[in-house]
View (cartoon, rainbow, N blue to C red):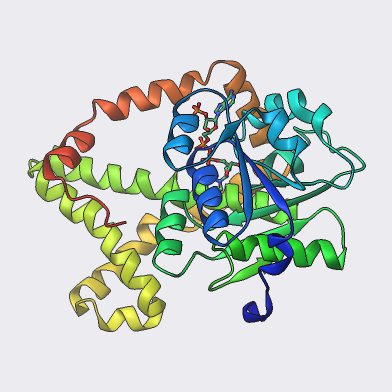
Length: 320
Ligand SMILES: NC(=O)c1ccc[n+]([C@@H]2O[C@H](COP(=O)([O-])OP(=O)(O)OC[C@H]3O[C@@H](n4cnc5c(N)ncnc54)[C@H](OP(=O)(O)O)[C@@H]3O)[C@@H](O)[C@H]2O)c1
């Protein structure tokens, strides 16, 4: 896809309602406004609404924002989207385009599409704060989009939306609700929010339990994960081997395969199956209905963990 051929004009002729002013809501509303798009923000009274007012938006009710827009973005946590969607569905109008930043609720049928509306997703390959930061520096992040139907003018509009929020500066992939949802969940669980944090914490604990200082363990097993991933993305899997020491390259070669072996890969296949069969979505629904008991417990554990303490003491935070 030639990203230079994507124009901002289609989205500039439309009015966009951003519902929810959190990670994605704030980044998308600000980037759209800076791209010359007419944006309305719909939010409940709360932290997000206060922030939106500080950012210069006139915060409205969901009904008012939906009523005066051509495009309505539901930018709430996925587990909250169904209840807000159900409460606001009656305000949606024929031909409105309804958008999400992740395909979860649409794909797993947690929301019921209105036949007269069109549905799409525009997903950012990174958190809202990183997207806003990249956009302000004149760039953006890789993005993906999916449509509920093949329609050329709808596709041009969605691509234009993606460009206005900063998701068409490097890579913009066309996908489907199913592919985006399944890949996104798989990446989160096996690498980004599951495998990687678990690997860092287990390695940290191993060193600390063996009597090494927690500061040393943190720098080696956690802080350097950030620097190595940045290097990997900058130079790629081949060139990076010239930028790490031969000792590190050799040690990694013989040990990496012990850490992530065929059993790990077999487990990954099971995880993918659980996602694709809907088993994970059902488990997540039960967790939400339990008041997110496991998430509350895990946050509490992390809050008082040694790894959190040393992170705070060292103050070696991310750079964005
Ligand atoms: N995190 C990311 O940057 C990221 C990256 C890619 C895709 N996504 C997708 O983007 C979508 C939004 O995720 P997010 O992380 O941006 O969400 P988020 O930051 O957690 O959303 C917070 C917003 O939702 C509002 N909210 C929460 N519960 C509510 C309720 N019961 N009623 C009304 N408003 C409520 C909050 O209001 P208050 O401020 O009043 O609490 C706030 O405005 C999701 O589909 C997610 O999968 C997110």
